[in-house]
Image (cartoon, rainbow, N blue to C red; front, side):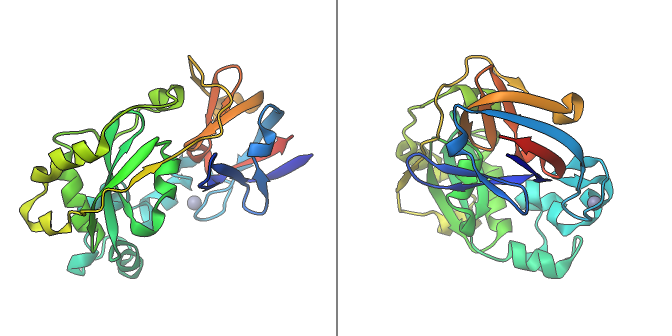
Amino acid sequence: MIFEGQIRKMIAENGNPIRYYLNLKDDYIDLNQQLGKKLTLVHDHYECLGCGLNKEIYRMGYCQNCFFTLPQANESIIRPELSKAHLGIQVRDLEWEKKFELQPHIVYLAVSPDLKVGVTRATQIPTRWIDQGANAAIILARTENRYEAGMIEVALKNVTSDKTNYQRMLKTEKAEVDLVHQKDLFKVYLPEEESKFYLDDNTIYEFHYPVMQYPTKVKSLNLKKEGRFEGTLSGIKGQYLLFDDGTVWNVRGHEGFYVQLSI
Ligand SMILES: [Zn+2]
């Protein structure tokens, strides 16, 4: 069967294991069913997530023009502490920014497999953790807006990372980190103004990925350079497809690519 369409981030449904769907905008392909089978990917052209034009993707699925003009790609997406909507200040589109930033956010600790801190909208739980390939996560604080969550994250960046090492994430099946203990240790680092957002609930969220075999060495597929790839799917973790020859494909990193997929 041949499918084609614009790559968007994979859709994940939490479960044991997690179920993944490749999102080609008009077609959804159940990827768990494809484990152990051969896939062929061909890059045909680009379709920017913003303007829909066949323009080279710059970052986050957007062409250069969309990346530098759309509110969906403004600085506070990557650095929540730069949010300005709570002050009524526009960065690119105040109405859009108000809707996005002025809603409950959470600050979390995740194991992916190293301990990291992160921020996301409360509605993105547990999707955000699955997208990062986390093995486990705990909520540290729940705030009223994005700015407050960003301020907590900035304070915690002094004591832990805010990045995921994707190679270690893909190679590691399980990591033992005492998240309740870590959360307790980090409590004192919350800025005074935001300390009231600390969450007492210590629920641990755990994730099980559909991976037949974890790679020992990974080689990242760059579809722009290669144009075409053929391989046998051996697992799915985070936003990556794993193939049995050690190739890993960052699906989210290829948003806006228009591809043909044969299965
Ligand atoms: Zn565009």
